[in-house]
Amino acid sequence: MEKNKLAIKSQSPIKKKKTVTLLFSGGRDSSLACCVLANRGCKIHLLTFNNGATIQLDLADQRYEELNEKFSDAILQRKLIPSYSLFKEIALKNLEEDFEKYETNLICMGCKLAMHVISLIYCLENKIPVIADGYTDYQKQWIEQMPEAIESVRKFHSEYNIKYINPVYSENSKEQVKEKLLGFGLSTESLEGKCLFGGTFSIPDPQVVVSYIDDKLPFCRDYIKTHFEEKNNKIPLETVKLVNNKRIIFVSHCIVNQCARAKGIKTQLDGKVIVKPILDLIIKHNIGMIQLPCPEIKYEGLNRNACGQNRYNNPLFIEICRKYAKTIKKRIQQYRQSGYSIVGFVGIEYSPTCGISLTTLDKGKIVHEPGFLYKEIMTTLKEEIPPQNYIGISLKTGNEINDAVTRLEEIIEKLDK
Image (cartoon, rainbow, N blue to C red):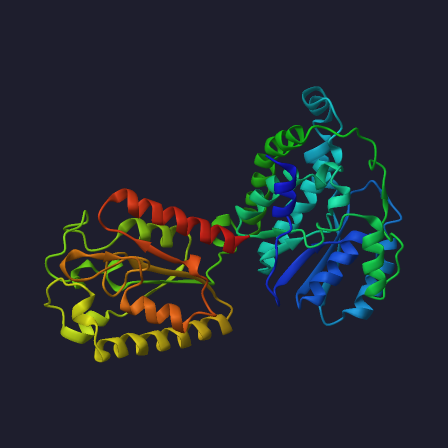
């Protein structure tokens, strides 16, 4: 993996007005992260950890007072949480074996894993969808702030549907951070405690750090699972995982109802009522699905023969499509006002009505343009939905459907970051 690529990827954006748990040491970087999140309208829970090896931990209290004075509306909670027991289990209990295996001191990475495990539990219990920290590019030589380590921890968080972000990772110098803190009206001192293990290691190869994380994660998962099973009287962890059910996808009518298609259309789905790979993907990612109306049925009923665009190229049919598009726009606005994200639209290529980039004229001639319905939708939603979020599937071969599924996976993955 390329470091630069990973570093850029770790600068995950966050939508405004989210609730966020911030790993807060009181230092410059986590303080700037708090300012940035508050400035974006986020509501913040500050978690400071006592690993049992940190002196002057109370310095963070001074920074909290500064921040709370500036952002009292944004900071909902500040907690000092003991992490020394879990830190010992992850990083110190098998210290001799770890030294022998990795040939370097990775204690600080184990300490950070303990913080992340506790933060995950805190988020799950308080229904907080995002964890953030103050990691920066200029400190990426530190074990836990290496881009490769960040990506491994990010994937771990995603197992619990928690987004892990690094809002100040783009900062590339201490001076830059100081200047921005001054801009927020804060002192530039580093008001964080000093850990006895800080700076006691040589810089290892990033893949060694990733291997260490991978070896420790099974214990971390078991710890989280046990915590919830004990707390909830053996209720499985899956019942408390955060589920992102704030996403909506629109699909053409016949994707879930092939019975509505015109007579005479032959596809590799003959005899099947739904386009199963698309529905499997929607179910897998827990996405709300809205089935679009069929203008062709509205115009001439269910019992109709297959045709090209020429038969529908008239003011009445186009007005039906236009009204549907306006209704869809209103529905999207309502969902977004309620905090939902729109994944996009899935249409049927070659359809005179629902083609995304390919449509059929009379006598089987194919042209590279949307069908009538999607032409109106794309025009009406020009400012709402980017072009790449319209996915057309062809029902001619299974491979073409699989290609569409892959593209949808990519769109969903971007939404989750």
